[in-house]
Image 1 (cartoon, rainbow, N blue to C red):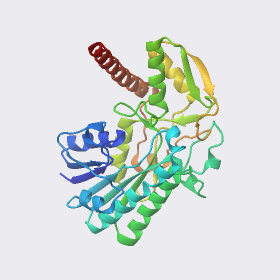
Image 2: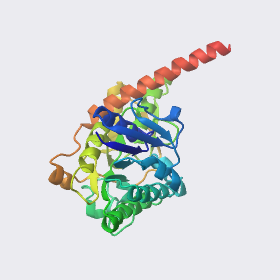
Image 3: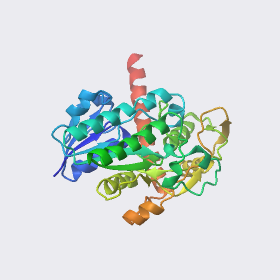
Length: 333
């Protein structure tokens, strides 16, 4: 049994990671800035703390007496959020900086940092037929403005804490993680959850239209949460001391993603394209040569399979919300 801190435990990926580590028999301390009732998942078997990890003293409180740290904490969301909140995203640099300082001083054995494909050079992502981003494509640096630069700086901090202080650090560059128990509305949701919600709402309202940001030709790869959790743990306990892609190599256009959700729902919608909406780079895909070389594995859960599970979960959430709202309206009458 290890004593493990998960920073960002109230978030989508952090919540799943806590569940896995608890299941594996570890003593887990989950930390997040959100009130406990706003965490996506809460494990009763974990020690759960509400702390703002941008503050140095809170980071020392979070890690003191523990063995390992998984840092998944960040102020982030989908493209609509990160393009409009660049300063807020960059302030997450305080979380990783202070967690690294506390980890060094408190004798933490291993430190995992959740980076992002947003660190990659924008000039490598202008073609929808992207052949895949290799880890070396982060340099020369031209990261996503705001969020991407914060992540790239965080990677360098980890590297230098390893070189200068001997702290074992591991870095994974996430490529668009999706699945149940995540954000599906409110402005921070990513494309898979947003498309599921929009298609479900079209079925509920009878309005057979869907608004797509951009022209729908932009491409991405999407990694199901189970693959992500396996990758996090495998990378953490590996001997790989360089940033590593953690993402599916199954690329799809946004139009293709809508096709998948329509097929799951059994409906067809008229597509309206908002060309002024945030849309990010034209093409982004994970090139997985290194993860296959080092770990003999890569994320491989098919997009259609993962999207069906995600759709079913979001559909249930919206159905529950609809029943609750009807009950409230009836009571108020």
